[in-house]
Amino acid sequence: MGGKVDWFVIPECVEDILEIISFINNEGYDWFVLGNGSKILIPDRGFSGVVIYTGRLKNISLDENVLIAESGVPIGELINLSIRHSLSGLEPLVGIPGSIGGAVVMNAGTRYGSIGDVVGTVEFINSEGTLIVKNGPYFGYRDSEFKNKKVILTRVSLRLKRAYLAEIKSKLILTASLRKTQPKYPKQFGSVFKNPPGISAGRLIEEAGFKGFTYRNVQVSPIHANFILNYGDSADDIYYVINTIQEKVYRLFNIKLESEVNIIGF
Ligand code: EPU
Image 1 (cartoon, helix red, strand yellow):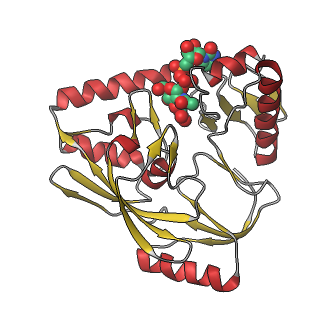
Image 2 (cartoon, rainbow, N blue to C red):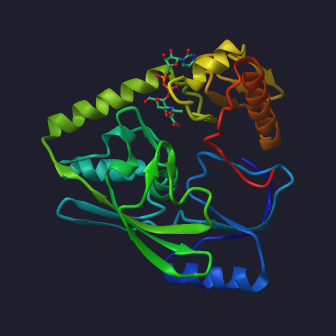
């Protein structure tokens, strides 16, 4: 969600990105990377700088049980490919709408596992324009060494395991069943906040009275309080709701909810 940007660039290969970084550094522009845009908020007034969209970095190759994907490949596409080749490891991510690059940056997952569990190497470009390959990068709960860093992921290798199709399918069904407690409205996003240690963010938000809370065209899901439904087109309104929740939960429970949404330039 969000307003207009000065530059929107769509690289098709690593060389394009190197050229873009050199342009950005020469001009002194601010920039950020956009994957599938599933969890990103840009102010309604816009962003003054360059957005690098990875949606055309879409090559995939398979080397035995190692899947190598460019950062713009949607997670769903990788899951379909792994099913076709009887490869297991990505089942905990079924239903997550992001690109593989975005998923790696925030270590996307569910309670059955996260992408970091299967990542082998990550290739990325840093803000100086150097191409780096990192073997076994750090991953934490919805966290990685790439989060909040000025880097562009270009390629990721995923170490999968051969498995029987029936086993893969039952894991997919198990993960998909988790979504039953989550809203289905297409213009929604969540989880909005990370779960604080030992506590559910959704429960805290519900106990603070926000289930169904509406501000302008934004509603806290009446089904799951850690999801926000967007019936309008204002990122500022969503930002307001995120802040309102954070403030009240802190006031009532003395707990600081940490946003999972990438908030740019507010
Ligand atoms: N709950 C409430 N009220 C609510 C929502 C939840 O009381 O409004 C309670 C539920 O009753 C349950 C507990 O909170 O006892 C946990 O809820 P749920 O099973 O829905 O899981 P979650 O902790 O809210 C996490 C991940 C989701 C992932 C699901 C399933 C986080 C922040 N969220 O949700 O991941 O899909 O588990 O594995 O870690 C994401 O990170 O973007 C995401 C969607």
